Amino acid sequence: MAKNIIVGQSGGPSAVINASLAGVYVRAKEKGYDTVYGMRNGIQGLLFERVVDLDDILKSELEVELLKKTPAAFLGSCRFKLPEIDEAKGTYERIFAILEKLEIKAFIYIGGNDSMDTIRKLSDYGAMVGSDIRFIGAPKTIDNDLAETDHTPGYGSAAKYIATSLKECLLDEVVYSTKRTIYIMEIMGRNAGWLTAAAALARGDDCPGPDAIYLPEVNFDIEQFKSKVASSLVTKNNVMIAVSEGIHLADGTFVCEMSKDNVAVDAFGHKQMGGTAAFLAAYCEKEFGIKTRPIELSTLQRCAAHIGSLTDVTEAYASGAKAVVAAHDGKTGMMTTLVRHSDKPYTCTVGLADVHNVSNVERCVPLEWITEDGSNVSADFEFYARPLILGENLPVMINGVPRHLVLPKE
Image (cartoon, rainbow, N blue to C red; front, side, top):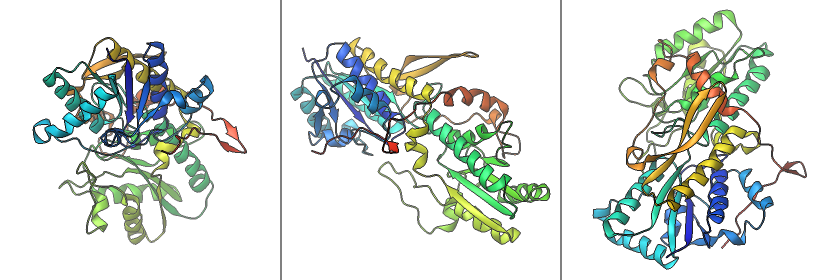
């Protein structure tokens, strides 16, 4: 019987995606798998047999610990949509031929919604042809929008970075500046506003937090937005607004589309976001006649491992390890989940869910956690999110900057 395991990473990376990879590797070795293979650039790389033996790289606990502190996808990522089985049977035949050649017993894929769709298709094909290979997904997405799990690895660290960055901007630009300015901070999130809602976590005894937070779960009313800014300017010189890149009008038009003729789409048909803060800043400058400043956190939200949440790292590692255990126990077509048991003290364990209930399902911020006027989030959100950003995963510093583990080139 085959005794090897293969793991890949897909989609947009996060600050803790490699902690899940480390969990897969360590638990696979504990379970007695002979070789742990890594796919270079996910399923797309596997189609070209681009694999690496992780035993050649993770030679000691030092490399494993450094991997846990390294952001971005160590193995390389991809945005490759597997066709439906009945549309391209040859593609699946090739994938399974490669897996059989490598004597793979378990296939672990670390990723978000589209990656779980890949697990769904591969496990369905495996069942159809009677393969004994087990396919398990380990969730990864800073967007926190996967179904069947309380939250996703990657979200806590991104939320911690957003709250910290917004707080520092507030102190630098808003609290101590005398020049009247409107700041618009654009935060990632297409249809789910979990990341933007994290701006509320900047609030505390030493920080007032943003003046307004706009999520894509509710329609954006630009007149209401104008009124909110105007009322804030009555009592203060500077205003800080947090907006999701995916906020949209009642007719479905994204605000970022209002200043563009064409919006690019990715391999999955998703519109490429960006430009929301720039549009609203220009709008405010015209309407109020004062200085505006758009702030776009962009890629920094998903790669700021230097301020990663220890809770997030720990859970990401456990998620990867659980995926191996599930496959070893004969499970397939499943995704590991994070199950919250209590809030005070915060306790969480790793469970399993049928990937068919996860793929192509998007979990959004509950409407009851958004204020009635759509311009902020409630205390219930803060109560939910605060435990996820706790603890620090301090980097190893060499010559003044963090040291990371890098995959050797082919």
